[in-house]
Amino acid sequence: MSLTAGVVAVQGNVSEHAEAIERAAAARGEDVTVREIRTSGIVPDCDLLALPGGESTTISRLVHDEGIAPEIREHVTAGKPLFATCAGLIVASRDAGDDRVDPLGLLDVTVERNAFGRQTDSFEAPLEVEGLEEPFPAVFIRAPVIDEVGDVEVLAEWDGRPVAVRDGPVVGTSFHPELTTDDRIHDLALFESDAARRAALESGDAR
Ligand code: GLN
Image (cartoon, rainbow, N blue to C red; front, side):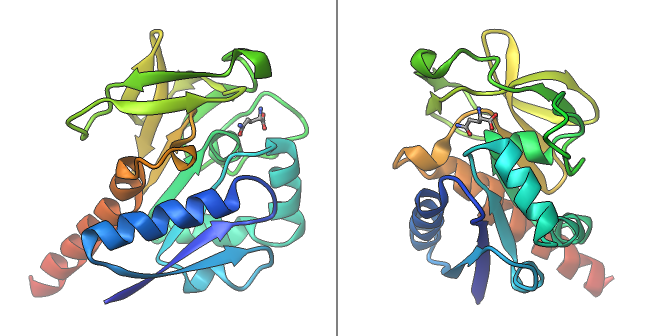
């Protein structure tokens, strides 16, 4: 079966996500086509979606201006996987604490931008992540802190704070898995979620 993955490409770490998705697909033996999303009309064709890191105020403005925001919401309402990293997590959150970000409300968390240190404080940490056997090399760059978590599963914590969460089909990380060559979180958030969704649909059909 062939899957279509969309990377929201209005701004941010687009090619890194596309490459990570392609590597994760290859490792699973899945056939994937990656499409970059700059306008409305493409998300409805996508099975999987990534919302990259970058500058959340810019990404927020452009996904709304281009009419991509409601399509991302429909994608998630349909139960399809969305993986949001760093600025993407901010945009996907319930409240970003910043008037310049109009959050999509797809992850039941509130965030504080740039609270994990300034640009100079960017750091890498070995992170225990729920569902992964070995620690993940997590790269934090002016990362948001997740303040309040609602009805979400916390997949990883750093320094006593959640840094990876799952809310149904949506996985968000404060850090940047796309900036490493370790594709396990892309696999978990996108391909494993999609396989689980399809299995659930099939068992539902069989009943
Ligand atoms: N500080 C950025 C923002 O608030 C996010 C940083 C990133 O994605 N690396 O948008």
